[in-house]
Image 1: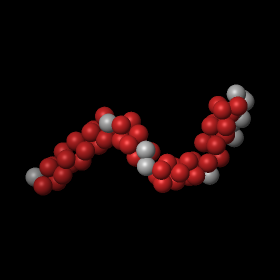
Image 2: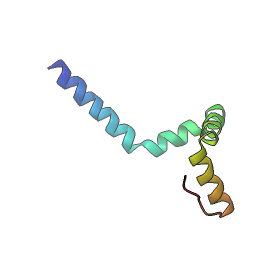
Image 3: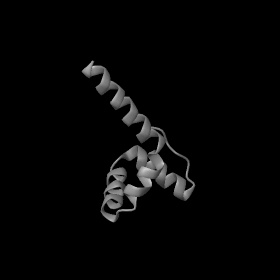
Image 4: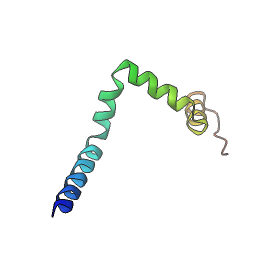
Length: 64
């Protein structure tokens, strides 16, 4: 019974996070340190960096 309650709580938690994901992301990225950390981490990912830079400068994306 305890496992069922924990599973139901986990499913509820995940669904709430999914429903409010953009509001949560906006709130977290409003904090300067977290925003800088997110940009820094994303720029260290080659696929992410290529997509962002190609979108900014209208270059075609090269798949690797």
